[in-house]
Image (cartoon, rainbow, N blue to C red):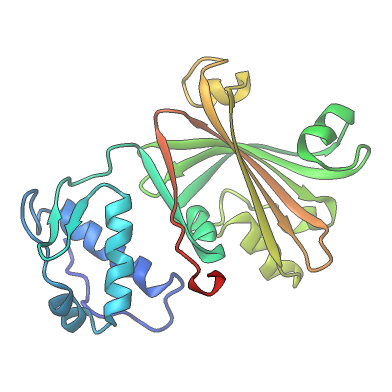
Length: 254
């Protein structure tokens, strides 16, 4: 296996702490830091990777969220697992981390077609009945394509349909393709999470059963005027996905 450089290139897309977390996660999976061993100290990691202590702490927090390490004040960081305890764990604290979900997975498209929304579909998606959308359905897989993350149905506004003919063959996320090819920018992303029975189509794709406990995540991508550019509905098996949101105290509020 090729040795990864210890320092990072300035042109990399992901935030620095996420890249460092991924580097450390790869080292743990490769056995460079066995279960039960201590990771290098924050000072050592700062020197090794030429990053700030804040970046180190953010990266280590991600590893804690993944269940790979535990941290105790005065005792450093200890490796407790070589892989996350569930199939996929996603942590979000910013719009960039929301986008990393689609960068860190692969979309396998099953079908794509133009549709006109009827009243029930429009109500479910919170869109207008009678409007035209490009509907893309498929599976989202882990980056190495070994595990199914979720079943996904995307509705992209009809004005983008001509730009998305290669979805599934192109590695970029759908929202990124829309931005790059249309010149329009996603100004805001709204996410809704709810528990619901698994629908039949998603159950078949995930080798589950219709009605099984599931997590439904809806992401709406809005333009500067608040108009909907794209809606993605993701269905996850209840026992194979963890979504972590870390909230910090706002000292200024007190």
